[in-house]
Length: 175
Image 1 (cartoon, rainbow, N blue to C red):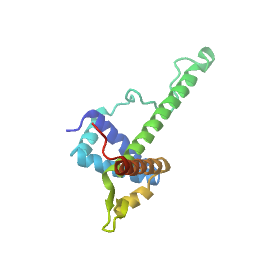
Image 2 (image 1 turned 90 degrees about the vertical axis):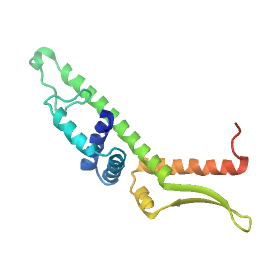
Image 3 (image 1 turned 90 degrees about the horizontal axis):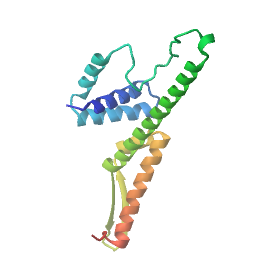
């Protein structure tokens, strides 16, 4: 059984898979597949969670899209409610955007770690070959990544190549 935090993440990724655009939608669908494999039954748990949590009030930390109802006429209270609401909504969307970007980066790094091989070998003639090998499907997934994900994917592969070169030149770390 998946923890509540996993179910909440699943629901947010599912929303992105349904409402995202282009590569964002594709990547979200791929993340859903991974989560469904890692946590069997999470889709049913998420559906049940949505039913039990269906409440006219938004959950804590989620701001509605409309302006909050004003408790008194505007001429008596000023526009402070709307100013606060807009600032709070902007902060929430900024945090959501950051979390979404971080999720995208984690997905790209995980793709590079789990589905791409980096290795060095010596040929019969004594040449050293440093290789990066990935399946065509993984390459297609990498091409469909958004800009931030492509950068993370590339940078992580470069880290792995650098690590392989360090191992070749300096040997295994001591200790």
